[in-house]
Image (cartoon, rainbow, N blue to C red; front, side):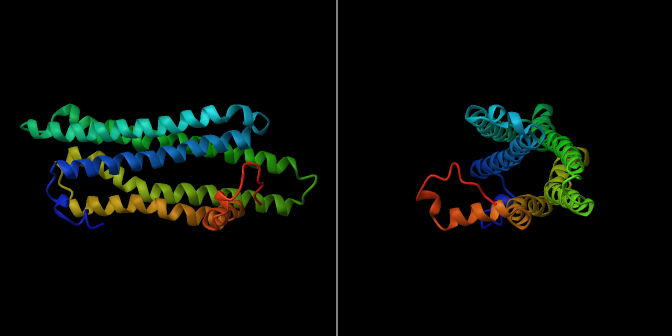
Length: 234
């Protein structure tokens, strides 16, 4: 926070650009991790019988490496583009494309489209599964399950879009308005995106008892006292 309020807010030296690169890389990785989680949920809900074979240790490692690798490439690409801007009399076209088009597409727009499609599919499958068990549960219970599933997905994606969309829209339109957006506005939008990482644990804890149980295991230190691989959470 102190660094954001310092001279980096108005003057971009090399150290500030490195800070910006880490900011972009970590934020991108956060979004890509959410995308990977949505893929995991898709197989867990839509293909439960083949889940263990589809989402194995090898696939998980690949998804983690891809998330961090793509994030690092985008962060490095943006800082290189920023350094090239100093050599150009005016902003180079390729650097504008990297900073304001290609970067946001791979950091935000593409993962968001993937997540929206996956969660829509999950919701439709969950509805179909809820209807299929009407013979064993009352219609009111099924309706309640459907409403909860809808509310959970809507809140998770709604908060995510509310926090991230304004910043990326602002970054995308900057070249078309001659970078006339005040720097404090951009920094405020940036802090709004970071707040999503703070809000997510509260959202999951409110809706999922298994998340609360897992969080208690971690906070209490029990996670390092034994093997919880096969632990069944409520």
